[in-house]
Length: 70
Image (cartoon, rainbow, N blue to C red; front, top):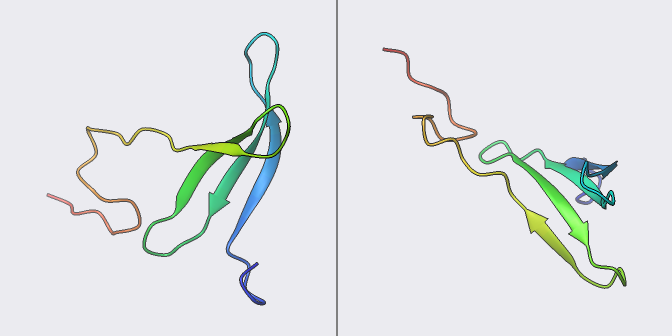
């Protein structure tokens, strides 16, 4: 929440690794650059690493901006 505006969500997930690792799946709904990421807390829960998925090099559009058709 930003003030009274909803700007995103987070869901608890577990990785498929052995042993499974818990993380938060994060989605921030920015109209110009929506963010979908994973947030991995450390063992103590004091810090976390935010991991953004790699961008698709085949894509010719920028996320959040309309695509061109040719």
